[in-house]
Amino acid sequence: MPEATFVVHLDDYQGFLVKQRYPSSLTLNEKVLNLIFYEQQKEDKEELSLAEIEGFRIAIFSAPEYPKWMVCTILGAEEDYNLVDEGLAGSGRLILALMNEDEESVNLEEIVKAGSILEKTKEEQKLASIFLTPSSALLLERMQYEGVEKAAKLSIWLKNQVQDEVDLREAMAPLMNTGVVKVELVGKTSEMVFLVKDIFGYRAPPVESLKRAAQIIPSIAERYKEYVTAFFSPPPPNKGYNPTLPISDPNSPILEDREKLSRLLADSLNYMVLDSLRAEPLSAAEVSLKTALPESIVKKVLWALESEKVVVHFEDEDVWALLTNPRIESFIPEYVLPMIKKKVSEKEITPQIARRHLELLIQNYGEPE
Image 1 (spheres, helix red, strand yellow):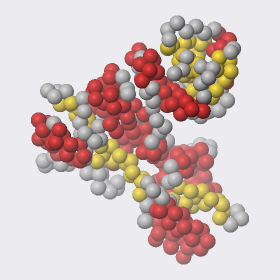
Image 2: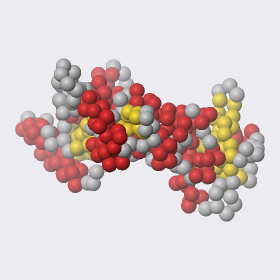
Image 3: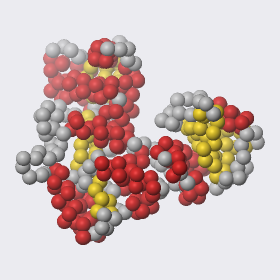
Image 4: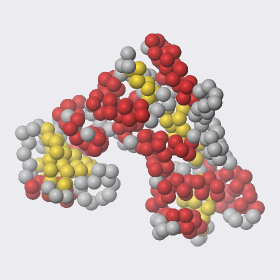
């Protein structure tokens, strides 16, 4: 186990503040804190690094979502950094997320002793980030319309849409990082953008949780089913939530709800709690045990999810269950096939570009999701 763990924040007015430490007897001087901060200002990305500072071997974790915050771990002289680096990154991720939510609720000793971690962003969360970046969402809509397009034309189109200078690569990063689009040089001069995957964000009925509730908590089964039915299929004249309606339909709930769901899924603490309830209803204490999150944080997240009609609370049993199951899923955009054919016939793209697009679609279809 590490010799010590501490959380540092650089305040604009007060300078370096050690916000949490374990053990409480740990003392640190200004020079050590200055050197720690210097070490971690090298790249604007999540990073765990090992530094030798004033005789200490210190693993330093930082993430761009939490600027000027660092989780530092003092390793023992014989401790192998390469054996513990993944765990240190996971605990650093968790500690910063918790500190951002509620500093007072963070029990550093408990987290360190339990080895609690927050895993890297899941694929579903990465897909959610597309809808949270306005220029990325615009590009996705454009690619759904075009199927394949020259990067130069896309750049001009995006600039006209946002009425400002936009770095196309930066705007397209969430789409490229999730494999939604591929960017390749075809021929000598044509950099092309290919849509090879599409995504769909919606609320699914919590089917697995409903089945499990009937097996393990029969006292809530009927009420649970009624709550879910009232949301998805209420009696007329109410419309309910129908994710199968096309987005162009004025009654479609997708566009209005999509950004809200994306924000919920992109937030790591929300995602951990939500994901823990997908299989079955649980008490707050059971969610805490399953996620290794403090129960106070779990309750706070559950209340927030309840307000967004994601979970429902059965007070007599003190059990929480999914009312809706937010999902963002990817699928193969078969609708681009006639687009490709039309663009070739109208000489918008060459047969070589069309062949490459088909190859990419076939490759992507064969990859495991």
